[in-house]
Image (tube, rainbow, N blue to C red; front, side):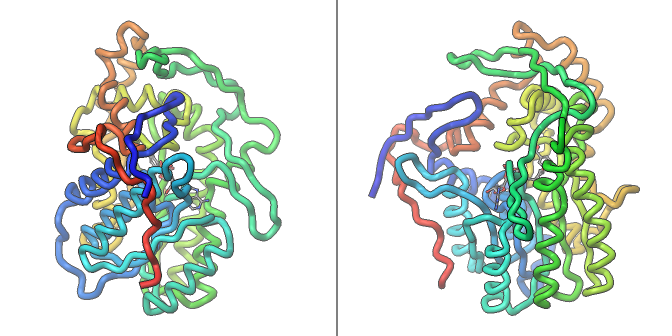
Length: 402
Ligand SMILES: NC(=O)c1ccc[n+]([C@@H]2O[C@H](COP(=O)([O-])OP(=O)(O)OC[C@H]3O[C@@H](n4cnc5c(N)ncnc54)[C@H](O)[C@@H]3O)[C@@H](O)[C@H]2O)c1
């Protein structure tokens, strides 16, 4: 037993410790925010969510359980409690597993490298022996800094850089005392094989490898459908995002969807699509220069009408399960970002962006919300949690044997 009071220690947007009770409460709140199912499926579909412990993958898992009645497997990469607490994703996974169990849903969580063939094999064994040998859905929501290619052993690193010329942007930082500052930062353009390396990590190669691995072992159900998550974003962040190295990876992911869609149609009458989501505060997104400022301003414009990930992903499940038809754009993507890219919203954000300075930022952006969202990534600042009370940090990984 390792009960203690968690005192938050951070460097910028990164916190050293996570709060188990706060993480559990967040998961419960997300669950409650999912609208009830349209109609209960005849049989619980079997789903695999890769990247299930955080951000959009966590939202996919919770919305899948609560709205689409799934059972299945979640894969993620988290650190166990030790000298520090476990990572927030460790505790969120424990809480998600508990919720699934309380609803009578079989959900197995595996902690390890999704890019490895060993993980693919472990998942294949589980599908074969625990889930009737047939996978209905695969949601791909990995955001990772590096990937080792199992064929070559080469390790690739993803970078967040503009392409062609340096990118100078306003950015939001919080001084040591927590006071917000608007600063300028410059990011040098991609060089050497930066683009190829980023595409190798965040493009569609590993998604394709998962599908081929499962197809080769005949584990895909008739009509199997797979979705990967993508982002387009604002013209304000285009140089660092959609036209940058990560944008090249997203273009590759979307191209992979088109290839997989054809392959799956022939193989099992299946489908592969990308879902373009809106901006959200996650560990991955806050690492991108300028995005914190952009999201804070977006919230300043939209307030509570900003669509949270779990609401977007409830819509994803409705379209995947056929409760609503797949609504594809001319590039074959489902757009769950229309609330963000609405021209009126973008014009209002651009106007605030242009005038934002350290002196004006608190009026233009919703920084209380942004600050709290960053803390909530670690289970901190969750309403209803007593942060003065000691909490058990030595939480076990959910048992997958029963
Ligand atoms: N955050 C946004 O604003 C935003 C917007 C639109 C789309 N998206 C997309 O959503 C997807 C997920 O991003 P996010 O922001 O939710 O990320 P995140 O950092 O919140 O979560 C990443 C997930 O990937 C898992 N992961 C990382 N490396 C892994 C590995 N090697 N093996 C297994 N699991 C691993 C983590 O454990 C975690 O569950 C990405 O494709 C991203 O582009 C994000």
